[in-house]
Length: 131
Image 1 (spheres, rainbow, N blue to C red):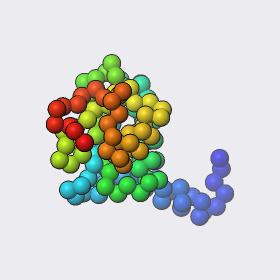
Image 2: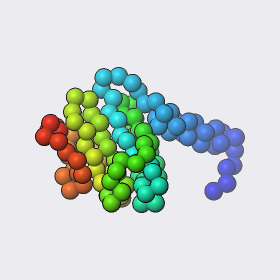
Image 3: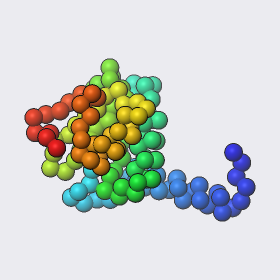
């Protein structure tokens, strides 16, 4: 779609800068939730780039300033890519596997916003992970 004005170009730039800032820094603090997305070759081949972009879009749309999205390398679960790890302050990490389609939306809506674990997609859940 062609850009029709300088204002439209500025808006696109502003949106992209917000996304990059969300990936790079997030809001630091004691309540920051970290969302780690496996972006090694196996993850990218399985669709982790789309997962990362969808997470950034959803988190931005919902203005979740306490959530930081981080690209990481191999998590060691190539058989279950794309993988996403959620680090919530005071809780053990949860690693989700086979994160595709609506699962991305569910991670944001259910896990991050409502503290519900998506049991059908959990790869690693320790006994201290109770939400």
